[in-house]
Length: 205
Image (cartoon, rainbow, N blue to C red; front, side, top):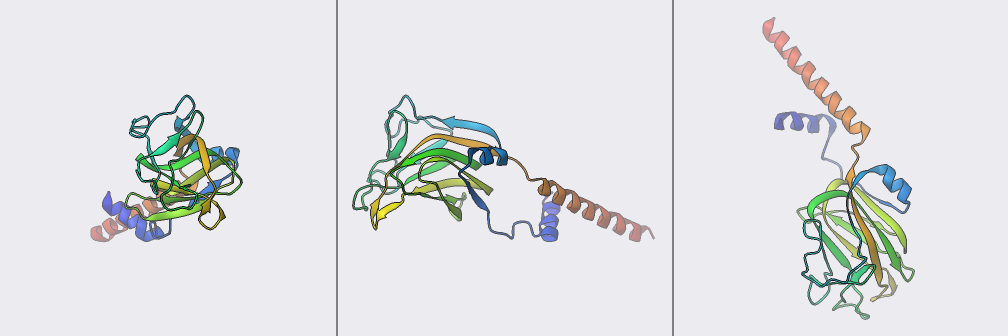
């Protein structure tokens, strides 16, 4: 099997390209690009405190610039940061570590008017790519490589004076394999099969 995958990678250059990370501000377009919803985190009915384990097995949310990196603030209908130790107005980013890598996730933003930036990372902490969100409303991210961690960085009113944002309805979706992926795999198998038949014919002759 490894030989087969290796041959396909050589034939088609699979794995040689940078990861593609795409952002969606249209929920309809996002839904058309992804598969079934795997789970939804709705912050309604909270608050809960840090370390509560409310999302165990799904996403571990954090605030990487807070004095306690595990802290995030949950209110009755959304989540925001716990306070930066470096920004002038103590507003900080939010990060999340997935229990299992994902290819597509979405959320609903609200802020005072500045867009945020989402950075996506793989299991080795390598940056897969980044996308700029809308200031408020639906936003989805789809990657062709598995995402293990993300960081949402605040927009700024002025240098080091950040816009606080809130997120709600955090959803993870299954990816939809692209049709060309199947076509490439089939073509690769045909090429390998033809090569094996040709070698058998030469040995027999």
